[in-house]
Length: 171
Image (cartoon, rainbow, N blue to C red; front, side):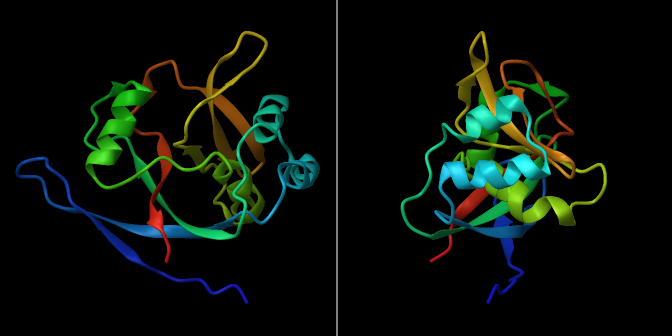
C-alpha cells in the first residue's frame, strides 16, 4: 500500500534577519525499484528525449529499495539573486540542509509524478551532473508533464527555476 505522508521540513537559514523557510516534502520516492533499462523502457512510452534516455541508462540505481524525501525550492527561495552558477545553487541549498538527489530521481519522478503535475510545471533535478552529448557537457534531468528531458548546467541559472532536492533519507 502506498501511503502518502505530509511532512513539514523546517529549513534554517543564515540570512540574518530573514525568517526561517518552511518547505513541505512534496513527494517520497522509493529508490532501487527498477533497473535502469526497465525504467527507460517504460519512459519510452511516455516521452523521453534522446539525451535524457542516454543519461538515464548511465545513472547509478540503488541496489535496494530506499525511501527518499523530495523538496521543491527555487533559487530565489535559497537566497540567490537573479542568476547564479550551478555551484552557487548547490552551495546555497546545502547551507539550508538540502542535498543533491541521486541521478535515479529524475527518471523515477517522471514515472511517478508526471501525470499528477500541473500543466506548465517544470522541475529541475539537483543532482551530480552527467557528462552527455556529442560534445559532452554537464547535464541534469528536467521533469515535465509531457516527458523527461535534460538541460545544461554550465550556463547561468535563473532564480525562478524550481529545483528538486532531498532533505534526508526517510528512516
